Length: 90
Image (spheres, rainbow, N blue to C red):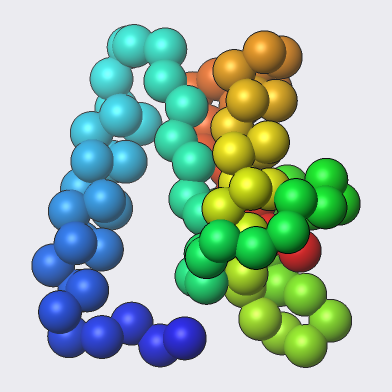
């Protein structure tokens, strides 16, 4: 799903926030969900990426809200991305 003109200011704000975090001496983790995130099925079969979107076999960046929640809880319980951004998708 292409970014809309209305979403561009929000995207710029998130980039600015991430840049502030990257230059800070604080402990932080930044998660970027897939481009398409919506209620759906909890599968538990998602993939974790770094700075680039995780794409499925059809080239889509998508995740269910339920699987996104699992990824967030997993990171909170066993931090793997301290001072880093991670992405989630199928």
